[in-house]
Length: 190
Image (tube, rainbow, N blue to C red):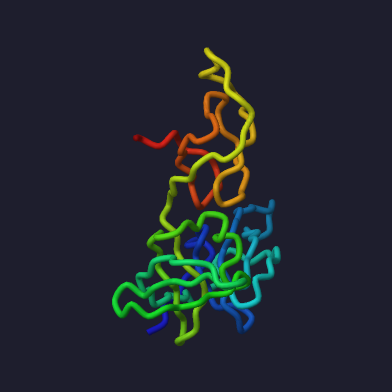
């Protein structure tokens, strides 16, 4: 049974059927025009092609919500450009290409448990944990007493991504990163 949602139900990460494709709402903003009706400006990502577009919808416009079948899996290793996951119920190896995964590869580390998203038997991507712990491999040295600052410094993490961290973070520290925003959360507890 199809679940119908309208623009007032939008949230980041919502998947909808639109223009014969499956789209994820990346960002959205409600706008009220003087006498005219309200609109919702959105940034949408096509989950089949990976392309991103911006589009405006009339307030109240309806869509069919897409609900994926999820299968628990664990990231095992890289095989060329494929990321190989182990199905945690059958122990089958499931290779998924970098194109299908997109930017989530910035947070993948060996043995990480994820959920593989399926729609009509086709792999659409994976769901990461909300936060991950990653080791800092490169950053400028910290300074004693530099514990509070409004800005920060760039730090390269073990997966190759760069995030802004507080000045007291050093090489070999492990930090917690939010996988939805890509931002530093805290230094990992030992």
